[in-house]
Length: 109
Image (cartoon, rainbow, N blue to C red):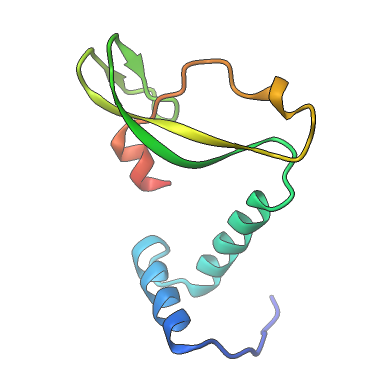
């Protein structure tokens, strides 16, 4: 572990505190690491990155991609929105299976 000394503006400090408390039990180091990993995943990647989710109503029985929960026709679930990376081979590697997430899994990501 290495100690770094840098200055953040007040708004950034407030955001760091809020995110650390909400997602990482107050651990600011873990919060900064997650933010940097997310930034790295979205910059210059070659494959596909989930950039958000859109809601959809199921018209058949589906399973959550993350937890495997079962959802019957008529339930509201979430479909990922993918961003294509830089590689020309990315098109052939987009997930082909139906990808649905439940609200619990989307909120925990």
